[in-house]
Length: 109
Image (tube, rainbow, N blue to C red; front, side, top):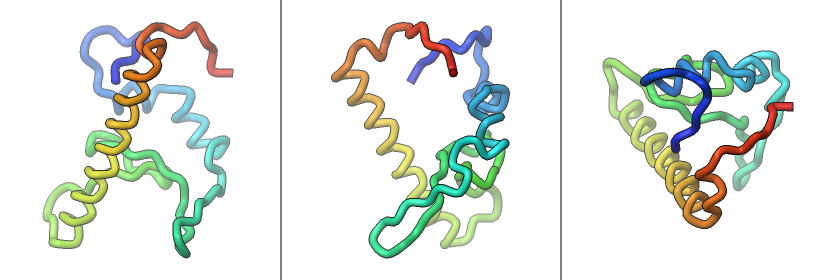
């Protein structure tokens, strides 16, 4: 997904995110303060998925790095599958609603 956020050149998504209003709001607990969802019989917190470059936060799930045992490798594999589902969903949305490919003059408020 490509979004122009006003950063020149190649800047990693994690850096742009870390300097965004959304990051600050998540840090302050404005989004997902204590919201949970129930899947089957399991109650889970709402989280954002990130790659290894993102900072590990209570509300951001990222893969393990370094010295991976079997359990961590399995976690990383499953997290990767989740991220692929999200990427595919955005691809479908862009294919269905072409307006998502153009600039939107909206504010964050």
